[in-house]
Image (cartoon, rainbow, N blue to C red):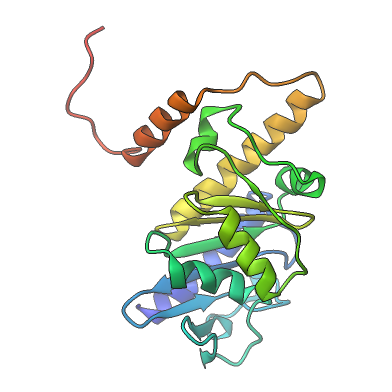
Length: 221
């Protein structure tokens, strides 16, 4: 982990959350995991993203949860980040937000069904984790359970958490799932959505594995 680069990256992505209207004020938190040192870098608690200084990014030992470096107070949700790094090998970045439409569904206790193919960025659907008080180990466990085999979960009466191989992927999933939650909310105001089939969602998830990569073979038109 090139510490200075990671600290700057976390701050920049925090600013992106604000610029993209994916959070407000000091809401939400971001982290990056370094597997070699088993250490995660996480944003501090209670400091606006545009005001965070690099030395206020905190390093946490993923195994113990103890602070390795940093004087600021780490995010209250550090255990919710830590649990994914400890038990999953496909996630090296986590973003937790209180996006308005995802949080709307979360406050209803609703999952996000496959009404649009972009849901497949996270999985066949997005579950809603059972409620637990913020900043608790129980919330971390609930989020982990609901996000099994997926890269996002709603948090009942709370918000959204997404993970990826890097911050860019985690942010893209956050953005797409918020968009789909908005669609679902709007569609439900009119009627019931026509949902995509399990087979179609599996196809979309396979296609997204190669998203952005150059394809050398094309089907004849």
